[in-house]
Amino acid sequence: MNTVVCIGDSITYGRVGASYFEMLKSEFGGKLEFINSGVNGNLSYDVLKRIEKVTSMKPDIAILLVGTNDVWATYSEKTMKAYIRKNRLPERPSKESYARNLAGILQRLKTASIANIGVMSLPLITEDSEHILFKRSVEYSELIKKITSQM
Image (cartoon, rainbow, N blue to C red; front, side):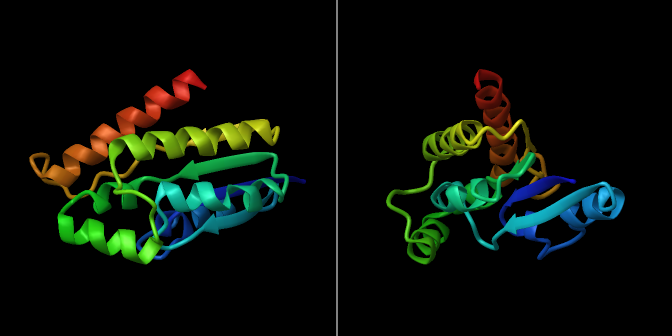
């Protein structure tokens, strides 16, 4: 049976709202084995740090959804400092650090010979299209498209 590992933050873990992991497991659970590798509060930096643990599982398929906390971490100086402290980040979260981390995650997944890698765009943060978090979630999703198209 093929193994699918879902990698990400609380959205993957299923802490808030409907879990895409549980939906996939419910739909395909008899045909595929699913492993939830979502960790609440993870930024792309955190996922990059633990990606070897994921690749050591030797999944056939990897599904990645990461970046929502990266967007949140750029919301305000106070929020950023909280993420830096809590996650022991080596630098201030930014679009540039997210791009580097995402590329690193994808490269390590590819190097581990995972045949099928799916990368999800970010959910929109807030429904207000004028809100900075909405705009940044769109920007980061565009960045995901750009990076994945180059891999």
